[in-house]
Image (cartoon, rainbow, N blue to C red; front, top):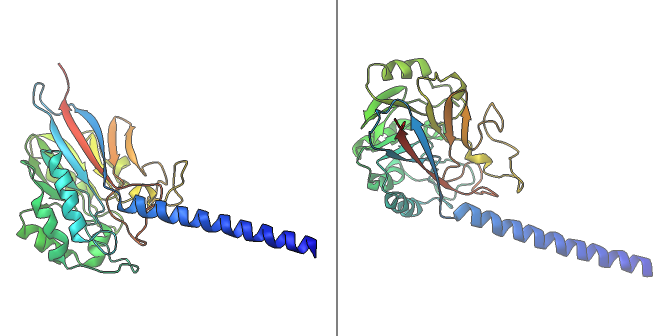
Length: 284
């Protein structure tokens, strides 16, 4: 009987420890999910900018995933205020404005999703490419709202933004990206080349004439290990292009962790991010 009582006490203690760990992880997850986005800054020296030309500050947003409970439009409004406080010259949004996740407590209309983005303030404009969730939700409705608010949509197309030429790929994850068509659209335009893509996976196929690629999609794993890395990245390259800045073969890729969530409204050991990429000319 004495031995049975000791086992029961041990089991109760272990259950108590497990409960405390579970509660701690739940608190950490909600904190990571709802945290204000951290601002990650990097500088890229672009040989396509004429010597002596001023720098261009690009705010890179991605994976906004407007949906309840974690990303209502009101939260996005506050994030937009924080982005404006960075005083970017150009805002690039790498897709997934919306989430239609099954665990969402509320799915918003295209008008409610896009309206907060209309307050973004950047002299060179705001440019968006589609993501996979945008297509699954209903891209025509979102595109109409973007147009109504004067937000530029690129989908296998290109345009100039000050001294830059921005090529915007349609979504690679759903098979809509056409790199050849996008590069052809960039060809007649004068300026330093930058490619905006929802997924980072097209990066290896981008020619060195486009030395800077900005992307999202991976959420840096969304639920990651505390020691780094993640069990899933939604990239064909695993962790190779899953998060942050990658300099490879004379080109640079920046992959943001995004702002919202998909599938489940939870982040763990990843936090929302806004990247501030300063593009500078090469020093003579």
